[in-house]
Amino acid sequence: MFRTQRLVLFAITATLVACAQTKAPVAPAATRSTAATDPVTSDPATIDPAFPAAIEEVGIASGESYMVGIVYVAQGAGPHPLVILLHGYPGDERNADLAQSLRRAGFNVLLFHYRGAWGSEGTFSFTNALEDVSSALAEAHSASFAKRFRSDPSRVVLVGHSMGGFLAITAASEDPGVRCVASLAGANLGLLGLAAANPDRRAEFEKALGGWSGPIRGASGKKLVAELMKNADRFDTTRRAKALATRPVLLVAGSRDAVTPASVHHDPLVAAFAAAGAKHTRSVVLDADHAFSDKRIALAHAVVEWIGAECR
Image 1 (cartoon, helix red, strand yellow):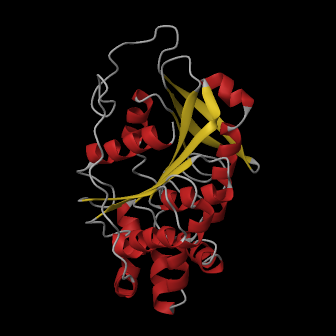
Image 2 (cartoon, one colour):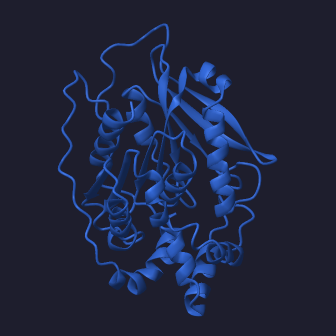
């Protein structure tokens, strides 16, 4: 994933970074939990034998296809809040460590693969992926899902990484049933669409996006770039701030991220939320790369503690 994303997104950094003037505020370190055990680093102190933790497969219908998913079920009778975890493009890093930490903290977690990705049926596109998130939300709100997984359909959170951050922000802004949303090293795909107006850039993007043929099916580089250009306005995450201004939003960036640099993708989004008068937006910048490779514990603490405080 990261080789491909560097080719795609690093190419626009030199062009766009000079235009990004707003510096994102760095949130103070979150207060660590005072509970007996830390769900990020410790197993539960006790086990509920009647309602133990579990992991179960689930199929989610989207369009005429089925998507592959798994649910990390928290122990206890519940009903548990649900976090839907959205991976990036193509999704080598799926943040399963966050899913485990969130489950230990008492949240159910749904992790699924978009149509045409990692064994799910159908064809991948960015627009399809947005529809897939809507399909997953509809499933999460259903009575059958709630009963099967001891889940609370009224407490649903979207958390996305990279392209998944774009999906989380966009889908949440269009669905008032999403209680909270978090974007981790989120990509503003609208910027790619604008940058692709330059023929040289467009050729670079087409080559990069089309160069990954393993886990992604049915998406040529030319088709994906054409989609970005066509949807540049809709895919611009800064345009979503007003719709999310009254809901809790967590925006996390890595200061060493060369794929979605904070000055290009994170800072303008933070500024957009501020301009929209948002009162429940938290910005966190970690000393990390795009995958938060050496800051996984810090990332988990930031996500788990924010969701526990704002979304439970």
